[in-house]
Image 1: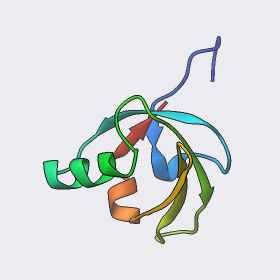
Image 2 (image 1 turned 180 degrees about the vertical axis):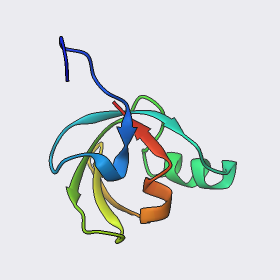
Image 3 (image 1 turned 90 degrees about the horizontal axis):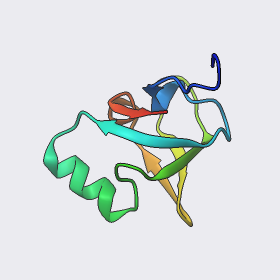
Image 4 (image 1 turned 60 degrees about the vertical axis):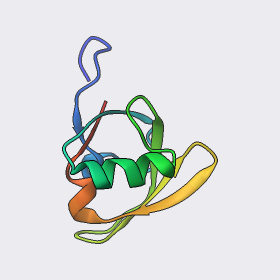
Length: 79
């Protein structure tokens, strides 16, 4: 981060317990709708609680904890 600006990156690049805001989801509408039902939508604050290379991520969204497939997480952009 330079001069207080936030860098857009994928959910898979987010460090553990670092809060971020969902900026974009390059997913099929079906996947966007499913994630929205779980609380993950544009503007939502998220935190990655647990991750491993090429494995699903455990993500905190609102008061929920959800697992996000690694391939889907690579197409969710946060800042």
